[in-house]
Amino acid sequence: MTEMRLNVLSFPDFNLRLIDADSPSDVGSINDSRYVRVDIPSRSCNIAEMSVKGFIFADRTIGVSIPLNKSQMDYNRLVRFEMRNANKTDEDDILEIALRSFPSDRRFHVGVVPDMKVAAPIIRQWISNLTEPYVCVHKSKVVGFIDIEPYRDKDCFIHLAAVEEKYRAVGAAVSLYAHAIKVAKDKGCEKIHGRISSTNTAVMNLYARLGAVFSEPHDIFVRNEV
Image (cartoon, rainbow, N blue to C red):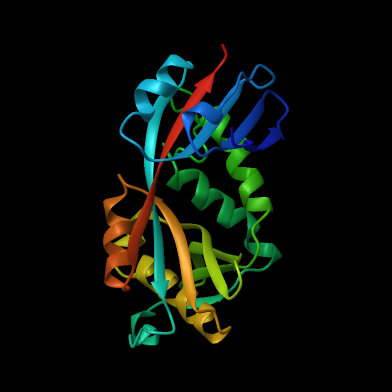
């Protein structure tokens, strides 16, 4: 049996146990956390096996990678909004955008039923731990952000991104992702990676436009003790 890779996050009102496992058989008995989120490579039998353990299927995510060393795309051409490094004064704006942008995202909604009271402190922790955030600005207003972090040897990973809804269709989202790719390429990264929900067709289409390859589907399961 493969040892589970796990982490326990503590919040004022609950504990969250995050588990990365290779299969349902690796997920043992867990009684020390009110909320449990399990990430497992997708297999057709996972839902039935995890149901026996008291988990529900919550999402399927897809790995994304863009080979920067092979891409001939002019990413500068896609950046139509002002982009800059985030600073301390942007933190409240970034948090507010994130709180409005993730009404059901299973990275944060870890209960059987999505609940913003549970998701909000998790989102706040993610925002407080951003590695290298950039913001998208329209008329001096922050309308979106993206965060990249080192990943493997010469690669980067898009850790988190969000855009105010009314600016998504007018180029803010494309600008953010194209800017992140340009930053990664300038750093000498060979690939930039991400992971998105298979239900998020808008971002999947955006990645496809930017030359992404999709692979490694994972199943997300959640369980919470009342």
